[in-house]
Image (tube, rainbow, N blue to C red; front, side):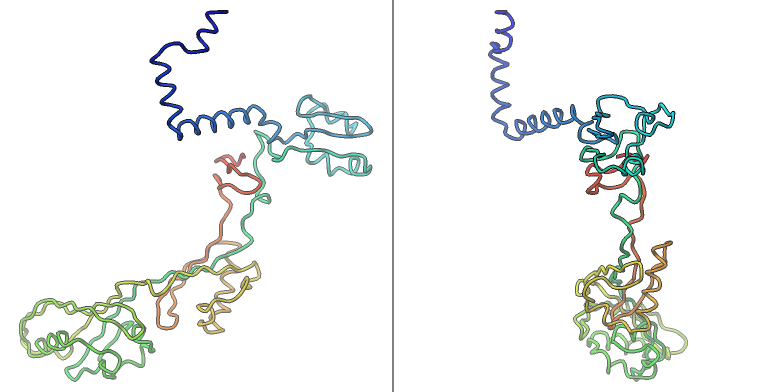
Length: 322
């Protein structure tokens, strides 16, 4: 006994020093207690998570299925001597016919070999229409009088229909920097010029760069010069995520971004939302108030492994088990 007492009191000075350092290390000390508590809880895991009830009251008799085996025949008198499915048993007419019949299940009614039912998962009741801001790119060919000869997406940059930009003065839509005007003039004179890239701020606050490729003299002076525009940031256009129900109806208050979409296009998007409840839907590019977005239809489909839910706080593994 004296030997055991000596061992428990830890007389070794070096071990005492290590134990003292460990106690002074608060993170390690707290972590040890957390692990010890979790381990203690795990010893009673069958009382917390089990597909068998803790207690059953049936025909004035008490049963404790977690601790003892009871055959289905004991409850339904059907000649089956296998373990019953207690979840089905509690909805069986023979069980529900008498109000004195009842069961108490553990907090989580999932057994170790039982797969989670998709109906238990808080998924699929919403489709989210996600507005992802896209970088805007455009090109425009201009004549020497600065009228637009050809445009690709330039109208989007300046808040106009692209078809209405043709033959208009580009300077009516944009205040081009002097360095760009000089570089354009050099090219129309058919003189050699290097690549040019200059920052430009649109009236709506977007930051762009306007650029020209390098140029080598030709047999004849060019009839048009191409300008390239590229948006450098999309911070001013926040990502939006709008929930819809299975009828394609907006949940909650309509955000400003949704209100900027024409009614007929809203109807088309709602139809795609309804389709997304059944199968995946391709993204939709859309220009809204002069800004370019990619609209994605997101739904949290049920796949295993699955993240934690209220009924499955530790999540679900690859086999669909809690």
